[in-house]
Image (cartoon, rainbow, N blue to C red):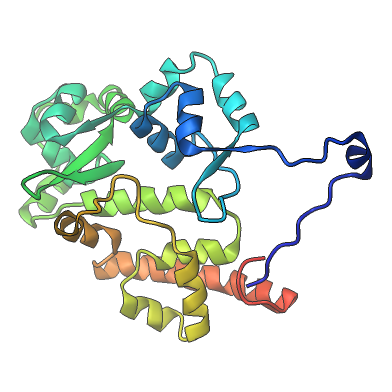
Length: 274
């Protein structure tokens, strides 16, 4: 991979003695600076509400003070930011926020009307979906007809087929958020490859050297992904787009991204991000 050369500070800045790079803060310190709890801060980063700076040598996220000042200058901080990242877990709690019953909420979620923002595995090794409270309230205000009465025909068909679109909706959000963080074509390709089964990646990327690049650039598991092996085994399948239609869509996007990435490599003479 090509290592990007550091940009030199202007000569005038060097003469003034202010050419030092801006210090970056660790995530724990940044959370304190913003008046957020650890989970609130992690969710804000996930949603792109707090932008990361260059990572440390060990890969840990770092945050520029200018970015923290920008966030703190937002109107209503920190309460407004807390409201944006507030999550509710499970159908019972989410249904109360939505203003309906757990059964109806589950049907709306399974039929794809609501997109989870995360998940956790409880002590019974059951998957618990997390939803943004603000999105639930917005949905209730926007779609009051879906909160009462009979299910629409499409929902009845999906339920009769035993469909559950929650994993797909979560992956769509997860991939979209990751893609928003970078414009580098190799990194974007790595995001798309990360949600494909190995056989799909091998078919889309026949060059082993390119697969090594994509693996090296693959994003880490999402915030909240369990570390305990038994729980990780429950959540692991969520990370991959197994349904053929969904996997085919990501594979087509990967192949398109690789076209741009290879074009970049041809112009620079290097394989990998520049």
